[in-house]
Image (cartoon, rainbow, N blue to C red):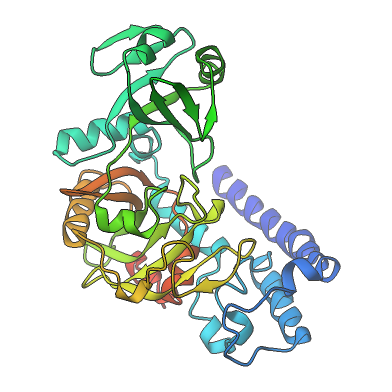
Length: 376
C-alpha cells in the first residue's frame, strides 16, 4: 500500500515538473534562441519550405508535446513536411524512454555490450569475426591478451617494428577518445602527430583503454573514403509480438575530409541502406553543424545510389546470431565493418539512437512501436 502511494506521488511530481517547469522552459528556449532551433539551411531546397513563423510554431508545439524542441527538425525535413508526415517520426525523447524500458531491465546483458573486452569474448565464442583485441591498459602496464600476461608499456609497444593500431576507451562512445597509432622505424604517430613513448604512457594511464589491430576493410568499402573505417550501423530488434529477431532500417557511416573516424558526430556522412540488397540509398546526410545532404561523396566522388555493400547478407545473419545470445536486450545497434573476407563486428550498442536511421530512411515511428508491441 505504501509503495503504491509513493509511486503515485512520484508520478504526480513528474507531471508537475514537466507541465510547470520543463515544457515552459523549452518554449522559452525556442523563443530566446530562435536562431539555434528555427534557422538552418534546408536539407530539401528543391521543395517549398515553411515560413519562419511556421517553423517557430512547430518547435514550440514540439516543446509543449515532448518537453523539448526537436534537434533533428531540419535533418528530418520537417521544414518541408506536413503535420501528418511529421507524425511518422518518433521524437528522440519518446524513443529513448521506450528503448530503455525494454533494454534496461533487471537481468539485462547490457554490460557485455558496453565493455569492449567482454564483447570481444562473446564474438570469439560465437565464431564471429571482430576487431582483434591485443591488450588492455592498467595503471601499472598493459595486459597482453595474446601472451596472457601483464607487461610494461615500453615492452608491449617495443615488440612492434611496424603496426597500425587503434586505442579506444573500453567504454567509449561516438568515436571520442580514439587514438590511431602508427608505429614504424621512424617512431610513433598518434592521429597523425609524432608522439614519444613516455607521452603515450601518460595518456594511457589516465583511463582503461583497449588496444586493437586495425581492420583491413574490403577494397570496395575503402574506396568510399580510405582514411576511415566505414561501418554499418546495423540495428536488430526482437519483435515483442512474434518473438523473432528482425533487422531494422539501418545506415552506413562514411568518413570525410581525411578523418580517421566515420562518426557523424565528427563530420562523417550517414547513408540509408536497402535492406534486401545492401544497395545504398540516394543521399548521404551530415549532422546540421557540418552541412546538409549530398548524393556523391565529397572526397571520393562515388555516387551513393550506385554503391552496394559487399557481404551485406552475411552481416545481417551474424548480427542476428549475436543478438540471439543476448535475449534480455530488446534492440541493439551493431557497428559492423566489412573486411576482405566478410563482416567484422566492432561493437554492439544498447543505447543506439533512432535519429540516424530516421534521417536516412524516413519516419520509423510505426516500425519501432510495432516491434515493441506498443503501436496503437
